[in-house]
Image 1 (cartoon, helix red, strand yellow):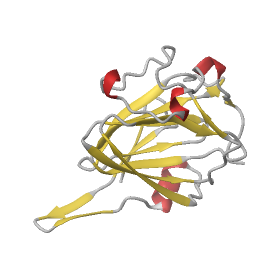
Image 2 (spheres, rainbow, N blue to C red; image 1 turned 30 degrees about the vertical axis):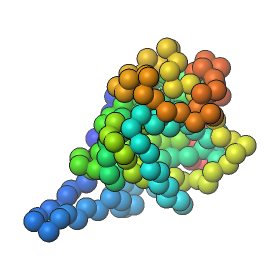
Image 3 (cartoon, one colour; image 1 turned 90 degrees about the vertical axis):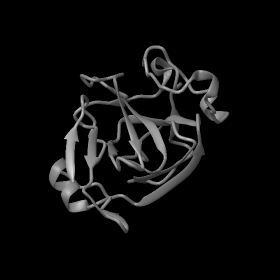
Length: 190
């Protein structure tokens, strides 16, 4: 696996080695020991999630507050998305900035999103199967979100606005300035 720090160094791209031939392919999508060696700490993933969506479905920007904050390791099994992580750690040098990347079943790239970030994606293919690991369970009381189209975040979602499909919850999320944030100095893994 090749690990690459992004413009926000705590967000990491992971490119697994794909072994393919005329029969198909094999890919190792997760190894705790190599991820831990790169990060310098372990992430106790406890749950795998998967969603199936059609073109224009936008899910996000979502996150959970402590004590149920979540790290995510996201990937696409089939199709393509634009995946986005937004730094919501007040006091961080990259507070309010985001990383965006195309993840697809073809490129097999993954994105590691630590606690203290909001996450969302939009489907760019006809359909998409999206999978991710989390290191904490879902908590309705800690569930939060940010408006995907907040001009302060300046996210280019690529898909035409008229084609976007959002859940009722995601049409009512607060602006970034009004959202709950994390503190940059706080140890979110304690």
